[in-house]
Image 1 (spheres, one colour):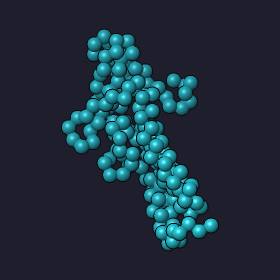
Image 2 (cartoon, one colour):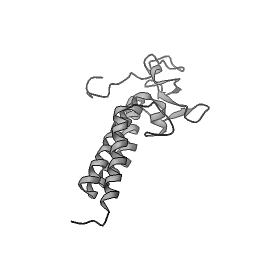
Image 3 (cartoon, rainbow, N blue to C red):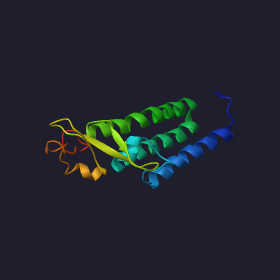
Image 4 (cartoon, rainbow, N blue to C red):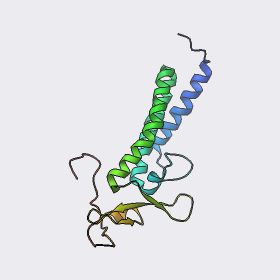
Length: 156
């Protein structure tokens, strides 16, 4: 079945997307504004950045393989990269902090997490994701939120 796309273009697309995906699997960059899933929620938490980086890398490798196998498979992987690449970090942030709020300090990519107290509902800014472990509410003094493990769901 001919698609009308030259084989050279197919191979170039496979090399570009597959190569970028393999590069992302082998080398991990921290949150930045050049490469990766650059959302405020991923820039606020390094753990969420790493998980979304890994997911994006797997979909890019899938797009590279899909360019060689079938263009339908390529476009399905591209749609999953766009949709799940946005929904997955947002869901992880919501599960970890109990909110979708974040705050931005000075600078281009200086996003920080916000946590909500489970007792009084007070919103509290955190300096870093590591501050969630010993966070107490400024308003009532209760523990803001217990950190949850991502997998398995029942272990935290």
